[in-house]
Image 1 (spheres, one colour):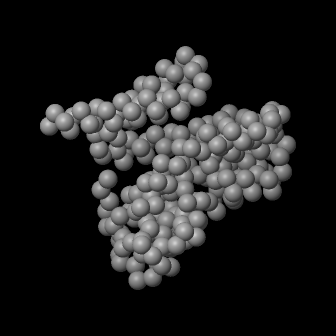
Image 2 (tube, rainbow, N blue to C red):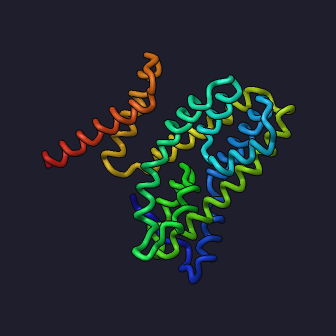
Length: 245
């Protein structure tokens, strides 16, 4: 994945952090986070949760789909273990992003505690911008840069959760549903834009075909099977092409 060089060299970690914050503030993901968490705040209000709980869940969980699953599970009276399992399965998607990002930002002298903050900030939005810009920076500035992106987007998410909570009476129910849809839509567009390798393009195309078929057939864990089947096929096709060439 190619990456443009930063606008200017960073002579301090603070400068890299501020560049990350500015990158987030001017990214399309700022709009996505704003609309998504307004919808999430309204959802929490409709389920009778407190605004403090809603904001705290954004601060600690920081994963829109997982938060929606948690709220609907609690609101429908599901057992806690069922809700925890559903949230865990939903958040597994973030593990490959963490695995891809850590080698990019860590150095030999990096301590484990220094990675806790950027790992917590990990989300589709942070991952896309970090993978796009961080390779063009010196390695010691990459963690502050990622922290700047995450801080700006997470703070926006927490604030917009409260805004949506108090605006819930004025927002139609359809808005909340549409707001939740923006997150996967933005992920789809970002993935298409950043796909460079053959395996990435094939996996993306197979996912678009396999996921609707499994959903139509009401296959349990359809997203999980989409990733397993589509990813395996894409890897096999990529390997086969390399062998032939």
